[in-house]
Structure formats: C-alpha cells, structure tokens
Image 1 (spheres, rainbow, N blue to C red):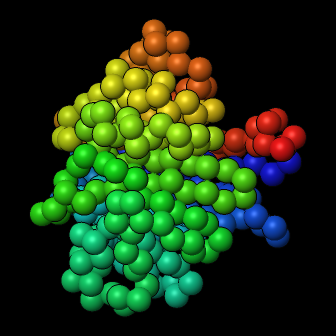
Image 2: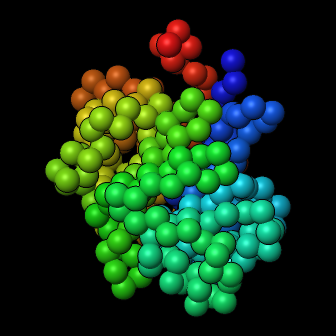
Length: 253
C-alpha cells in the first residue's frame, strides 16, 4: 500500500511525495529555505534550514502568493536551474518570476478557481483571503495524485467564503496556518475550519519561524479537542517525514 510522504520544511513550506507507478511525484509548496526575511541575519530564524535549496528535489513547485517567506528568490533560483522542475502560482507570482528574468514558459499561471494538470498532478487554486505583492490574488491549493488529495489553504484570514469553498473538498490531508496575525487565521479559527473540511489528517503550519510571528501548536491541538474535531492532528518537526496511508474506504473502492 503506497503512502503519501509529507515533509515540513518550516513556516508554510511542504514537500509532498505522491505515490505513482514506478516511484513518486514530488510537489513542493511555498519553500522558504533562506534568511531572506531577516536580511541575512541567521539568528532571527528560529527554525534551522532543514535542507539547502540547491539540494531540494522537486518535480513541481507551487508558490501560493508573493511574500518573501512563500515566494523566496534565494530558494527559487537554484530550483529554477533544473530544467525539469515546473513552477505554478497566481498572476502576482508569475509577474515576480518574470521580473527575476527567469524563463516565462517555466511558470504556469494558477489563479483562484483555475485548475491544471502537470507532472502527473492535478492542481486547483482555491480561494484565500490574503495579499500577494500589491494584489489580493493569493491562493490555496488542492493537489491530487496517486489516490490522495491534499488541501493547503495557503495564508488566509478565516471567513465564510473560505469555509464555503473548502466544504466538499474531502482532502486526506489539510495543512493550514495558526499564527493569528499578518493576515492569517488563529488557532481556534483553524480548528473551526478543520471541523468544516473534515480531513483525515490535519497539520498546522506558519509557526516557530520568527519570534514576532509564531504560535503554540498545543493551542491548536486543544482547540480541535474542544470542538471534537475528528481529524488526526499531527504536529510535525521540520525536516521529519510523515507518511499517510490510503484510507480503507479508498482501498475498497
């Protein structure tokens, strides 16, 4: 039974290993593997860089919006040096990509409500209430491959439009921010969204990177318990792999 492998890279960065015939397709979302946010001051980053960008292997990289800890030039440039890596994200990220002087054909536009299939993965851009550069076209992303569905909300405030769009997605895995500042939902709002989405597993993110913008994941765990959330809450350590098996229902189907 092939499993979905999940690596948390820190902040909102994840790499998903979707099982496919003959191996896996690696989808990386919002990798931040530098000290760009702190102007190069290494002491300001609480979570160490788990892998240098030059060594990060991925087939597809999604940037959900144009903020440095999600669209990081220092991380993206070495990835762009590999001709087989494909990039996707909203229009604001595509414009930034082009401004970097990188090949425009390597970056696929993925705005809210749009879908595309690339590298054996189906991507759908979902609604997110968050800024992106000088726009508000940030996205969440639903990634589907190998019999798994992963919904990463991206950075977003909590509101009814977000909840309405997330209902019915039926993901195996949900990842979402819990820091409660800078345009993001807090731990209790994240628990409410988890209850509405109904994933098998939920992994919180966007904490323990910067002292001024973090949260205690135990508060999210407690909020999920208080709301009787059925999903399994997994608190990952950056750099550690978590494997999610296929559900019994999907195997029987």
